[in-house]
Image (cartoon, rainbow, N blue to C red; front, side):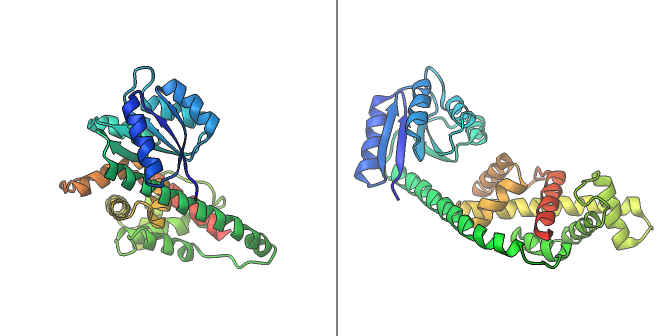
Length: 295
């Protein structure tokens, strides 16, 4: 697979080193270089490379601003940030902007080869998935013309919870009850307030007795379950960033910044405090995915 690069760095020595490593290690070809962010934007939009290597700190326009501008203007390639900065807030901002990989300065040949090798594998995987989707779409069109048996919520939701690694959590029963409640509504696509869902799950488990007390217990169980799902995805991402489960579920069910923070906490063996999780987003995404697979 031929891979093309554009290198954006105000340091001429760094540009030459990176270009040399790319070509000598057989990682692809350099489609262009630029010594600043504004010039880099034009180089990238003109060459449309697969991967952009961009320096974090540049005098005219920093790397984060450059990445944001390129994404705003429709560029969909991969970004590798080059930096000697270790500021966690700035690194977090770079991830939010769309950077997925880092190369540290001073330039190290082994690190560059390893990081760019991972990016290449990620691109190969994504292209392979895209080709599979295109091939499967032909069969899906043919299948859609045949009568289909409606699937039950439990049949759809259970495999998702298993993939997220929380089928054994006590909160999974509450999640299942909520999804079944949503599927039975007059408008199954409407998403009510969380309080209504908690009450529906409480009635499913206890009838009309002690609803308020059970709702509080349900919220705690849900928070533990969603936190466990986040931890599971973060652990998978640390082991294999290109794992299909991580690729699919992590950005879909969670804010990617929260995933990155959890990955860092696991990597640095920080004590597992209360994880920041968005229960409403988690349930909304699951609801939409359930409806899509039931139809």
